[in-house]
Image (cartoon, rainbow over all chains, first blue to last red; front, side, top):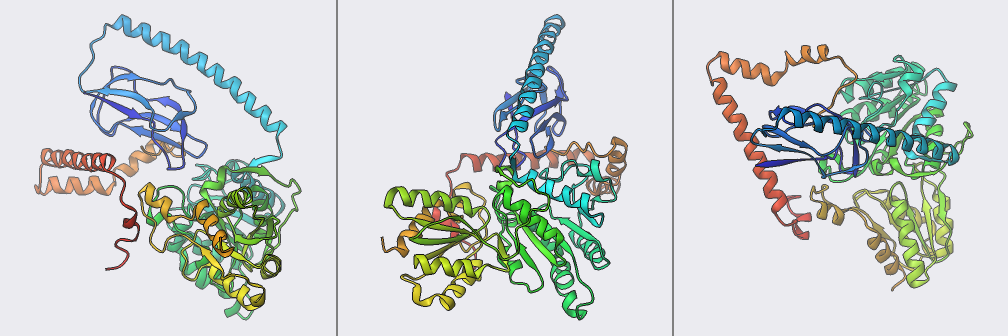
Length: 448
Length: 75
């Protein structure tokens, strides 16, 4: 029986990867658990293990092959040893080496191509790079700024956000921590009390729950409890919300949780541009700031400002699309879906939707929301969090209190389903707000 | 899949493997004659089979019905 070894996905958002190294050769015997290859993506490097015992029948890709789709067979393992004359095997190996060299040369020329493209198009960088650049810029300017977290240094970040920081700033300012959120968050909060400016990376905000006491009881409340004597200049950052099929414990939106807490400020970027402006504001602020990134957005490319003093203030929303007929208030990854929905509504119903990207969840820009409702008279909210006590719930309160007489329809909130995130891809799609849900809600407030 | 751990030496990894709690318990089980190494290997293979057949079952099954989204939040 022949077993196919497939290109594995390092994460559910990965679609392809590179084969960096084979650790076995054809004809070799392998046991379950033996490492057979190393693969990499822009996010991480991993080893592929044999799941069964057998003999390596064929390696289907060469070392250095790039962009191999996930689930494509990369090797064949058979139950029986293949008898092959040594000479033929040597010939095959020689042929492969030559081929592999050609592929390497091809890859090198592609690499050069990519580098040239980057230079030409240097105004478009990814969200991941925008965040990294801002951290580096602020670390260059202020020696008090340092970063700590799991895998931020040697591994270059679990999501490759801290790439290159260890090399530039050294191990005193780019610190790998043990897998102990409560411990390293407490350490960072203490450092902030004594005047440093720590940036705490949570591998994902799901793990911030391990450190919730340090964040809320220590970081957020100490200024108040010390009568203004001890402040806590600290940034807690990392990916928030659903990625793709990582199930209930690893797919949670914390925007509403943290926005509930007096003493914290909460930011949620949606583009490389506002990620840079908001993160710089967060690092320079003398208060604890929660900075909610999104795994799916890390690869999103866009324009950025190269002014290393460019900031976006707290409590300032961005009108991502000006419109006259209905207001959509949203933030983070749901901005993209809302803009898509706005296009559909324009094309199909000639509805001119205004899309507000909150950017800052606490403080929240009530003025921009109220002014928009006074113009459009209809509003929906779109967010990934659960519906009960969500950011949308707060916006409903703001609007009913300040623009009650301007409303021509009840406000509709579009949220995730009120259940833990299911694992199945079909249910995950059903759980998350989709473009169709947004279109439907806008139609509903227009009585269409 | 596993992490190639390029950020630490093989020696350090080997050192920690010596205190791997799974191996420590395994050696303790053998030492106290609760089970033999052969029996433990058999259990290991059975577990791999069980997990593989569960994975196969999942891959061969239809996607759950939409109503399952709201199932089992509360009793």
